[in-house]
Image (cartoon, rainbow, N blue to C red; front, side):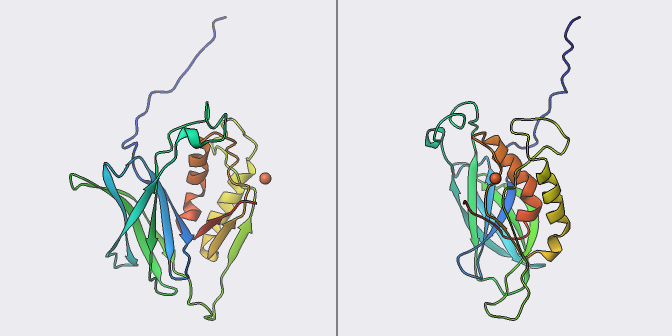
Length: 217
Ligand SMILES: [Fe+2]
């Protein structure tokens, strides 16, 4: 009997370089928030920035830095071999002089050299309180969160099904969370770079709204 091979229609991306996965981290001082994201735009093509401000009055523009890394900085296989994939560019902007407790809105973007702006999604966050101020801060601390396919499809390292439950629960409870600390392990990419993007996409609803602080242990 001949083997039946089926495949889906081919798909295309509207813009494969589009800025994605905005993620927040608390800055070095209480009144500073950093926004990091991923895109396909090097600084030779476009200028990355964040447009932000107190909710309802977006008017500040802050520049972002651009970094990347190359295959030869990986320790060995599979990260250097079959697991390697071009990571694109990672941008970080520092939003400073935040007013305590106010809600901010922000949007990541890239200004192309023809003047056109490619925007990412718009998100909001709440600035921290003034240090010492009487306030309730709810911090969620956990480790060992990986990633999984929501549609149940199998893939390499498919042992983190539970991460979907954890992610959903955090998203559901997001209005009661002021900060997340993910203290490692993170993602379980095990040398397959695309899995980091998959993980970052999975936690984006959380990380784009509250500071998502990561650490290794
Ligand atoms: Fe672990």
